Image (cartoon, rainbow, N blue to C red; front, side, top):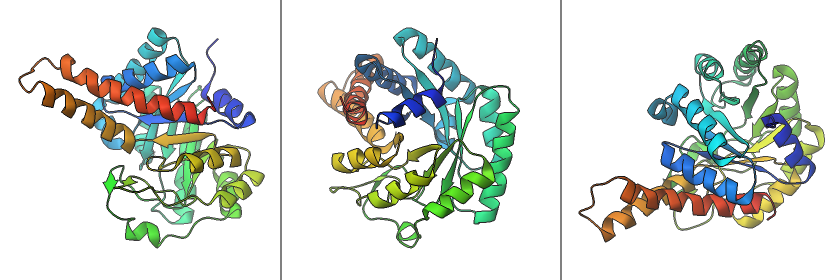
Length: 287
């Protein structure tokens, strides 16, 4: 019987592993991710941000992932990533998403709690087990290549374990994404700033729900390993996927600039995605 996402997340935490979460914009990226997960026999989460979701379509997203689960014979889940409205979260739940993230990181603490609580209540009334994740703290908004750490991220204050516990208690979320020195996007030519591992440990000491590390692209292997040992049991990767996909397609077209059959150059992008995902999944699963 297929495991639920909550079961998969709990099992990962128990053995100090993390479930890999990778964003997609089309079926080629989905296939690359699914191929890597199948080769390693590990579960995986497929995410779409609001922009990606608008491009792919909620219904198509859910249908594609269900088809991939059957085709590749793996546990593969869907997540509505960084949804900024209650209406968007409700639409994702209605479409059959396994998980939704209400991103209230730019709201006041009180408004973030209030709106996240409403999403949790809607998910509970859906008749399905839907993970609702909330955000505590601010790590930026853009999954792209950056030249510098954005000023608004530098100016933000990291939440305390008490902040995170209060948020969970007030909202009832089944997963939380705290700011722990992480950053959306990846810095050009250098690694992203190091994570505050001690803060992650102190949060995990008081948090029983899933803890999700956003902004994984650009982190060092050592930071990934330390964060997972400290208690992060889901890790998000997006920018690395985008960079690899584009590079693979560019290389294919450079080698054969007259090619017009999409499957003859898109496959290089798919394979590039598969390669980076396999590296990340191996790391997250201690393989």
